[in-house]
Every structure is written in structure tokens, then in C-alpha cells.
Length: 455
Ligand code: GBH
View 1 (spheres, rainbow, N blue to C red):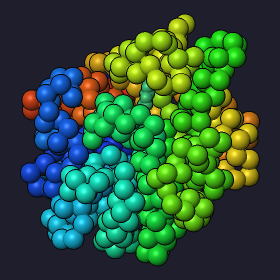
View 2: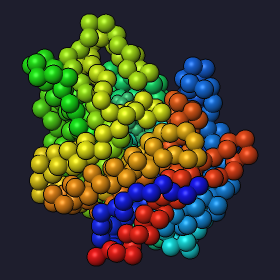
View 3: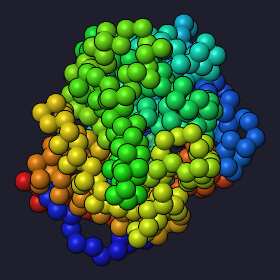
View 4: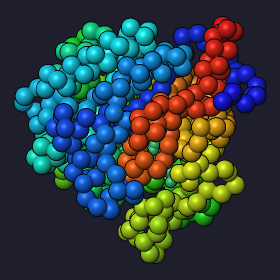
């Protein structure tokens, strides 16, 4: 399918890092060759995944990684963001290392290097080993320590060929969806009692940064979800609710990471679970070489409803001090998320405004959308719009040095199962046949065009 006619992208420098992203649980399959994770347990229970599927096979990537690396290479991007599955490396989460599991990542990294694509591993993308969960999971401090030990094992094996690391993916979503609302694994519905999960992931991040540095890593970052929070109206109750949501989404993780302190109000909520927050914050605020932003859409938030509300398939209990509202006047993806590219410019300017010189260089570590079909002109419009929005932020002085599309392949979209397709490449799950979509061809020629004229 030929790419539709479109104006060339605005210029990006030659050393701008272009990439595509995936995660282990969403593509790897070969579940019987690793230890179980919280997601295996969660998807085994009826009702948790909308189409009743699991990721036992997914994209069968463990067997087909050579073909997938060739797709990345042929796209013409310089980097591939994947995640390492903790239970594939340590089936029990701690203790005995699986040589077979480590071998897989060793071969994947070699294959990427041979294809001249930089491997950018994420060390945790939500697939906690079940044994670690059964010992208390991210509600306990010990999990942060176990995580750093696992990170050291991975770094010792592939660190010699990894130019750039990501510790955690979206600890905010993992806390909120996995532990507060129960829509993701491990399916806990703790509401604000989930806050220690945020702290222990942050601590795990800081300990992992130290483990990576000890192994010689030079270029370490994290991937956090961010998005502008818009109040439903100017009414004080709506503004207050939106500010609160903004703390949870945009500051709960970035303030400790970049400023070494929690936002107002949060420290009190954590007091019971964290004996010595000041000492932990020193670890958490280990300097980063860059900061990763996953952006999908803005959120509109208003004062809480009196009854439980349905939002985006999640039932939100009435005791939350905010309630999300529908954003109207913008196109929606197949997932129902509004498409608002200018919100990316707004977000990047807001991060720069808030953190000033404390903000490391940024990389967009995920951006993308769910649409069906091979002739995915809507995805082309989404990516094109967001790249222009990113360019505007750069022109306004925000130091953004890279951009990764979520995702290379259609894959297991968590509680949605296989119903949402985020790939530049279509996967026919019955045959595992990969077919590049129109968006893949568009991105390839857009990048080739940029390279021809890059400053
Ligand atoms: C990321 O999380 C994950 O890192 C990745 O694994 C996943 O596959 C990918 O995105 C796509 O979902 O209902 O309009 O308020 C996504 C983070 C947070 C983005 C919630 C959408 C709600 C949209 N998501 N947000 S809306």
C-alpha cells in the first residue's frame, strides 16, 4: 500500500534518535520457557481480559525475533526499545538464573547490533515474577531490592552491547491500574493504599540506577506516562480535582526523580508505609542521563461524582477526589482515546516550565494509537501530527532528543487482549504472518526524507 501524499516532516537533527517500542509480555510468547508472572495469573482468571485471551503465544517473538529485527532495520530507525522479562531471566524472581532466558536477550542484542540498531532495554514493564508477588510484590520494600539484583544480572550479561537503558515503564499506570483500581495485574483494588507501590517502584528504580552504574552503564533513563490534565471547567471544585489528578499522573513520579521530594500532600499519605523517606529519596533522585515520556492523550478531570462512574471501561469508585470527563471535539482512536497532538507540545512546555534546569534531555519513549486495518491513514495522521507537535516544542527550546513509536507490532494489549492494534506492522495471530501497514511505509519514507536533508 503506497503512503498517502503528505507534506514532508519539519527538520530534525541527524543525531535525533528514532525508534520503535515493544514490551516482553505483550509480544514474546514462549510462556512455558520462563517463570510465571503476575500477568499469567491475572489473565488466567475469567473476566480480566476483555476477549478472554492470554499472552502465552502473543507474537511468538522469542522464536521470530530475527524477522522482527529485520522489520526494525528495514524501517530505517536507529533504535529498538524492548523489555526484558524478569521471570524469563529469574524464573523465581530471585536465586537461580535461567541461562536459556539470558541467552535469548543475548541473541536479540547481537541481532540488533548486527542490524545496526541500538538496543534500548526496559528492565521492568509490569511482568513481576509471581513468586515475588506472592512474597508481597511492590507493596513491600524487599521487591525493590530483588529488582536491583535482577538488574545487575541482566547488566552483567548484555551491558557490554547496550548503549541506553530504561529502568521502569510507567510506574504510574502500574500503580493506578494494577494496584489501585485492579484493571491490570496483579488486580489489586487498594485505592490510596496502593501508594507504597509507587514508592517501592521509585526506590527500585534508584537502586537499579546504582546497579547499572556499577556495571558501567553511561546512559540511563526511565519511561513515565505524562499528559496535560485539563479541568472540566473554571469552577474551583473542578480545578482542585484536576490539580489533584495532575499530582498523581504528572508529579508523583517525576518530582521525586527530578527534585528529590514528593509533591505536597503525598508524603503524609506515605508516612505509615515508609520508615525513612528522606534516605530513600536520595536513592530515588540518583541523577539521570535522560528522561523518557510516554504520551498518548490529555485527560479532562472534574470534581468527583456522587456515584461510581464508568470511564474508559473502568469503574471508578465514588471515594476518589476526582472524576475523568470525556474530551469532545477531537477525533477518537479505536480505543476511544482523543487525538490531540497539540497536547504534546503543551505537555513538553509544561515539563520544561516545572523542572527548568533539573529536567534532563527528554526522549518520547512511547507515542502511538490503536486503529484497525492495513491501510491505516488515521495512524499516519496521528504520528504526523504528533511529530509536528514535538517539533514545535523543540523550536520553543525543549530539549527532546528522540522519539519511539508504540508499537512495532500489533500485540497483547493488556486488559483489552488482542482487540486493540497499535502496530506499524500487522500480525495475523492465526499464522503469525507480519504485514507492514501503510504507516510503516509512510514512516520509512518520512525518515529517509529527513535524512536526505538533515542539518
Ligand atoms: C502504555 O500505557 C503501555 O506502556 C504499553 O504497554 C501499552 O501497550 C500502550 O501504552 C498502549 O496502551 O481513556 O482517554 O483517558 C498506556 C497508558 C494510560 C494511555 C491511560 C491511555 C487513558 C486514556 N495509558 N490512558 S483515556
